[in-house]
Image 1 (cartoon, rainbow, N blue to C red):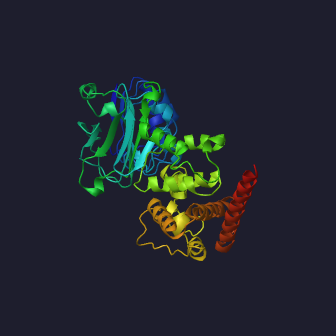
Image 2: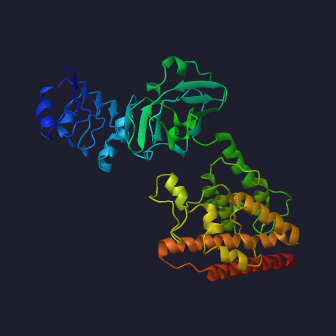
Image 3: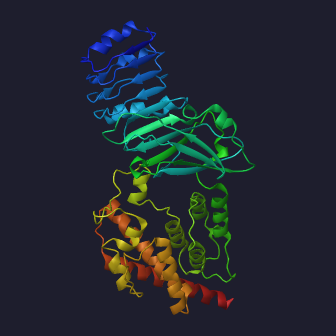
Length: 442
């Protein structure tokens, strides 16, 4: 017998372990709406089992093993599953061979996925040939709407991820893309020379059916990973080179080149995020010209390109259980919150030489705020390159105070942080003056 369907059966936990061994050639097992609680170890021995339906088995809490050759599992509304059991269904080893289609309760993209975005879409790049990929989509309700792949903004491939009963909680769809598209569609993709942009998005106009998360994984044995990029490959490199070699007027104050600091250069090379804001060139020039230690310039670069590991950032990358600020415990810890809006940082900006009041209602993003403040400094202070260093030192001491609170348990103190920033600023300015005086002798 190759197919068994049991629905709404009052199965005991002893039923499957005692009956399954007599069906070694089983290929499809459907036990929807049954009230057993354990999927036994013996199911691992069914080497031909390719499909397992567990829909509405809401008492199922433990999956002890899963056949390694299984390709389709529907565990919809199995809300009692332990995290360990869900982990077995989402293991990289199980999905690496490809051709899988799994649906189960969950709200996070597996950690082994290459790239994920919060919201209904994501992008990646490829060259030479379209890669073999898996997609993971988190939904709060089943959808009848289609999804689309857009290649280089011109070619479109539509696909559906399946229709299922109403969800009682968030669910994860994890599937090989070729399981939901036709082979002909993939073959007909026109690949241009160089890098090709792929956008994955939901077509639905209904916000309730929009994905909460979308993730992509490139099968490692089926692709040349050098031909796949999850950041904008050309722009990220150009931005780094521009920053490393930037020299607006060949009259830089202080350290003339970050190339003298190989450790910092190596750190910069890892910063390949491709997000870009119109304020960036202004901030870039100000960073280069300011009188501040290279480490502070690096920090400002990281702020502008969202490279700092805030709680909100770690949460979106599935590296933290909560996005909430450790200090105030009231708001998500974004970059804006860390440096501008947290109750302990706002007094610093008001009490410093600038006497700035951070207006939450007009604050767009930290890049725009920095740009506006740097332009204001340039208008007011003739020695703006030196004064910019104070702004950098304040940001440095805010970040340092935040880290000392989290990792060392030291309480935050706005006035101590400001004093530390002013001391750092004065000492560095003094060292530059001494260095210039020494150089003038020779």
